Length: 213
Image (cartoon, rainbow, N blue to C red; front, side, top):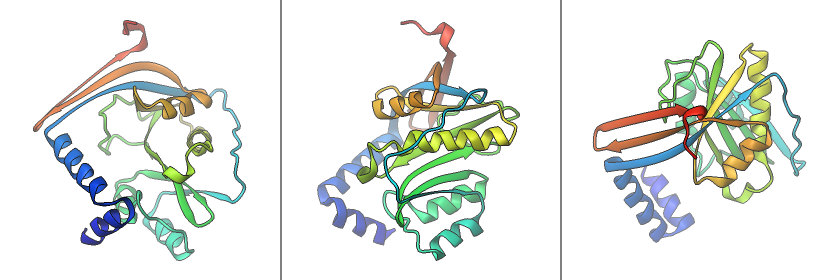
């Protein structure tokens, strides 16, 4: 933990670290989030190409596969964490990750079981659907469509698993992610609001037909 703090300060500066601490504490007390709920059915999938050549997409579903990545020399560093990856994988989540050279450029996580707690707590029928979350692109690799490319590969993977649909939630003010999801055919199927006040948590979602514009 101490090493993470030192690395953050060295990389982004003390002021950035203080802001992150303040944001963390604030979110522990109060959090209000408005989401679009997107879905993608797998009846028609788009093939998407990205603008770089030296990249490598890996699918990781076991701790052994993660350890093998590290042994191969692939670099997992901030904003990503190998320890966090290991925790999620041990829960049964599936990691889709894109490396540029040996550097980790993008991650997306897939949930296929209701045994895993998700945020926000979207209503998912895991017999037919999967949930995609924690889609993060490292800042130096944004703008080259790694996110929609990874989504397209996730859809292909889930279709081969005989699932028919994927859902994901995107904050309403996250324009780049909205554009990325739309690029691969995701459509808004509803909206949701998450509220946390101290230990109390509330989630309300409504289908698209009930949304007032």
